[in-house]
Image 1 (cartoon, rainbow, N blue to C red):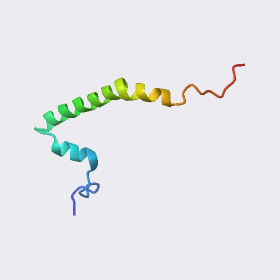
Image 2 (cartoon, rainbow, N blue to C red; image 1 turned 30 degrees about the vertical axis):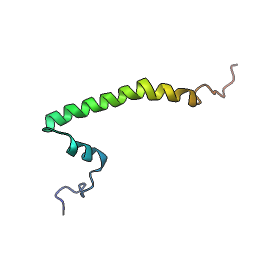
Image 3 (tube, rainbow, N blue to C red; image 1 turned 45 degrees about the vertical axis):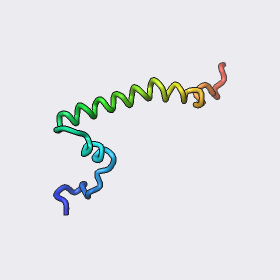
Length: 65
């Protein structure tokens, strides 16, 4: 039985990432911030521009009156 009620041994993806990062808690936090920033950068620079033509943002249904 766990001391923490929400911790049943399944801490999910973020717990897995945290356990596999090297260093102490401060270094893990810094690496996590860098990983998040790198992910956001890749999304905004490459993924979103690639996906924009595929999304129906210009298909408006309101007539100009």
